Length: 58
Image (cartoon, rainbow, N blue to C red; front, side, top):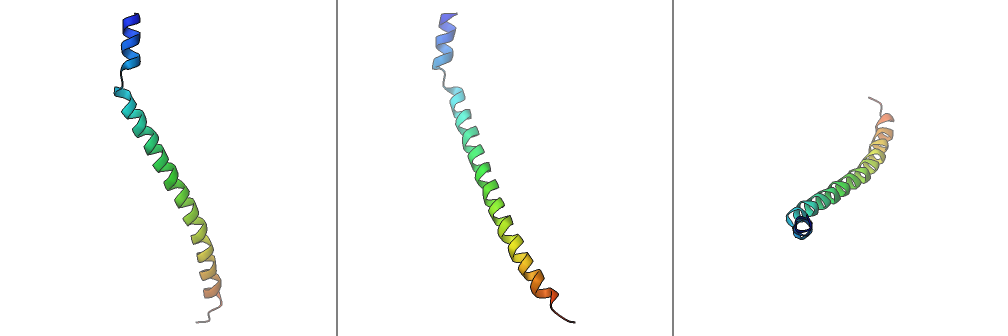
């Protein structure tokens, strides 16, 4: 049993998977943050366009 535990501790096959999971989570979090910032900015711009266009008479 002790031999199995030592072999399990020294095995590094799963370490690459953990690295990819952490990197993917960081990329997804960054993408969500960027989208949140862009949505806030686009809401302000669209409100300005709406205010400008409501004053038009056709």
